[in-house]
Image (cartoon, one colour):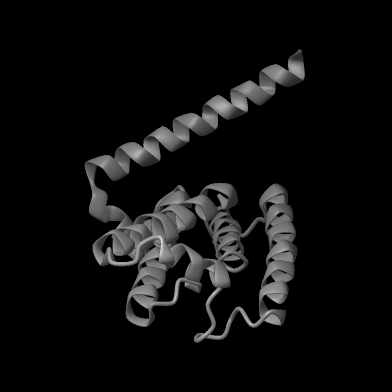
Length: 171
């Protein structure tokens, strides 16, 4: 019972921190577009949200210019490593160069998972810019003759939804 109480207290403390982050973003939405300000903020979530915006913008730009939807696929193994590395490094820098054991362990586990996932994608040719996952070709047929709907699908599902999903399970 005592352990479940401490777990609940930790969860509530984290939800309060998340509420503070989202309140700041709601009051000043452009704050997360300033890399220096987000890095200097006490909470590393600001900087990781900045990274999320940058990576989502990159994947949408590449999808739009090359009509290749697999750019998000390449980030499934890379983005979680980047997020966890910056979370660990942010803590290290802002806490008198002391490592947080939990963040460091999570980074190492995510790093190992990211290496495995990236290697699997690499071995199947997934990092070649001209190669697209065959499933995107099938999904593209659903939108034949509907270019505006296809672009909305590319923006909201392929880019924003997937990148937000990666962010949510990483951070």
